[in-house]
Length: 91
Image (cartoon, rainbow, N blue to C red; front, side, top):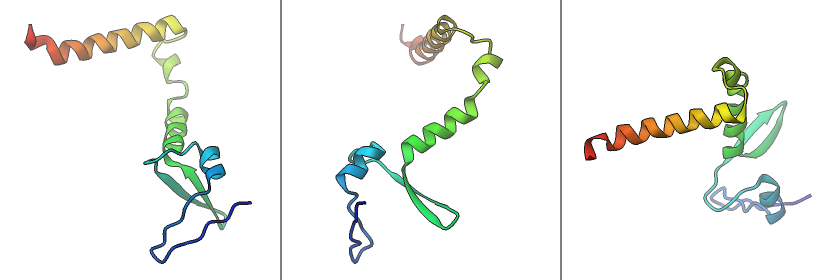
């Protein structure tokens, strides 16, 4: 168990071992979640990624992406489209 002291300004230092477990780096944001009377501290970036992954479940299949090759082709098409949109007038 790790303990942190709260300063007069409400600041705490997250212990090193907890930062490692949460994969926190300088500048990262933390999210405080309340669930059934308990408060949890989570890495906000990882939590956002998990939510995004959950929302995207099944979307690749709906789009007809069924293999790594399909995905690679879609990424390349998207890159080309962005390139064309940004640099089409610079020829």
